[in-house]
Image (tube, rainbow over all chains, first blue to last red; front, side, top):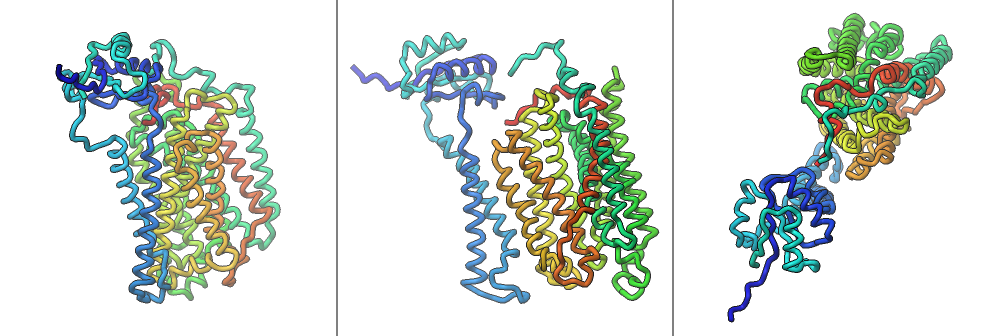
Length: 179
Length: 415
């Protein structure tokens, strides 16, 4: 007898953003933790229906921004006052007013890096393989269908009970997806 | 995602109309009376040869004028951008701009009576013996100075009254004229912005920059403007918070709007720093004596400390304080920073005007002089300003109730 393929979880399909929104509220209230919603376009307010916590990205941007600014200042200080000291226009070697614009720039640059790569990292992107693409129906997520996937690693996950639960949230179909 | 019935009004009358029994109806009388008494007291204390008086008077006038002009700018820019979020707070800005005709009258003593005390370049013998002032005479002479002042006042008053009138008459308009009012206000906005930019820049040159007539900075108008805009957003937030405490505008102006006002306060705080630093760095870098002098006496004596205070009060602390989303969305913390920003605006005006006052004539270590006359001028002009502003506020609805996009504004949410 062949080994039964491991399950990624259950995928429920919805027809409208409204259906998905209310289903998300029910999944949230049922206490599931390892699940996500998939939509062709951003659905306004869905983060509230899903009960998502505030994103960590602002903190990453904050730390990266101040780090960038500090490094930018230190770089200029080291160049102008330590490595190659030159007196220019009778000003002190550590002429910090002149360093401000170039301190600002790496602050912005590092902040932007923090935003983009922090966002990608928190979304676990790029990903070369995702189990959900094993589902044929899931192709319509880029067109006109809305999905919720509850993953098998969720402690509350139970194949039959969760299937029944998802069907009651108004799903068009619920299928089990291979990992 | 909340459902709203079609027969339910967007705002209820008791949310947006000040009740007859409310304190807000009495503020115009009380503030006006206090203003007149304080201003009379200030003029009463003015001695026969009190050359310092108009410096105190100008400081307070420029502070309150910044809020009037900032209110006009807010109205113009929201119409030009066809912004939706700001409609519920636009009426407050319209009332702030309604003070422009009165502020125009209050600036007249500076232009016609105090010019000789304030502006060195009005003394013919000083101009004759000074090549730089002779060179600048085609612009800096009393006739053109007075004509320009009248032009600014007339233009500002026209725009202030136009927007207040068009917006409040829309409240009682019906049918097609509702849209006509919106279209006229939107149509006039780009023109208004162009006129506003020129008049504000040149009035800042005339009334603030020419206090030290040797000095010049092309960015100076933008410097005064940036401070005015920060303070305006702070003032609007503060007025809404006070109205909330009296039970008005609840559920109409929400924390989503506080968040946006906070973002504008934060953004224009950075913009002020950008303007102030751009002005400073180029002058510091080039080291041309007639330019550096303006900063050199602000870096000496008492003014070294005040200059450092200004940098921290106007940029460093509000920048760090307003960075968080939670602070902008909480009315208590937002009110704290709003008051802070208004205090910093006054420090800024004082820092621009007081160092060139007569008590610092020929003094290379200028001293801060702040006394009863300064307080009376601030309370006097401020009382009259608040009287006109709250008169508009308490007589008309607190939001443009017939604006076609009011619902969009009430239900506005940040992502």
